Length: 227
Image 1 (cartoon, rainbow, N blue to C red):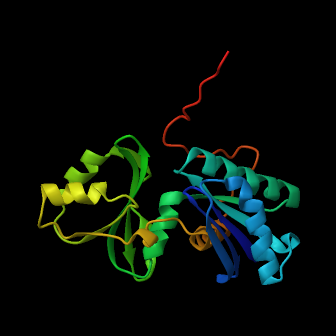
Image 2: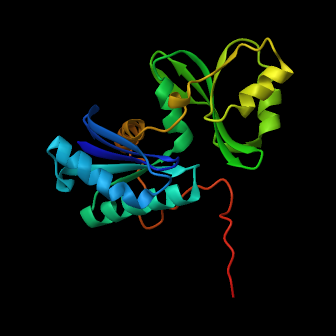
């Protein structure tokens, strides 16, 4: 089955076509959270792959955590395609999509994304024998709490976070820490990973209702009504 993967939770928009586990085409672009441009990216990879939107059998999309505009635009695009084509919609955690970048290694992995002020969205995963397993739900914690807990960890662990401040604080608390900071390119969600997770969830029947699907924000949007 041809699965369309959409990643719009960060400032890197990603689109991927996955055909029975094989990546046909993947395109990423720094679009400053302009998720409305996803339609153009989708058309681009369809034409590059010699496919038509009618060939797509399911859509997987990041539903959070992430930026307000990015999540809203990405999910709106996915919902519109799902409803118009009458195909399954699968929501994917942004943190799980990042964790899947490390499925070839072994060990513990903490994925963290900046949420608001000194807070981060975070989740713990374990990678072994080419499989990444979730150990905790996505939670919101402060930078200091993460740093203090990780500074007490004995042994190795990978921290996947695009911002360096958590890792810097760990080094301040424990200069001898064996925790490693992942490369920045490994700490962002990729559309191919979103599509791959979507394929697995589709097989287990974990699809979403397009009408009821909403972004999973870590905080309520900061919107004021002017009268």
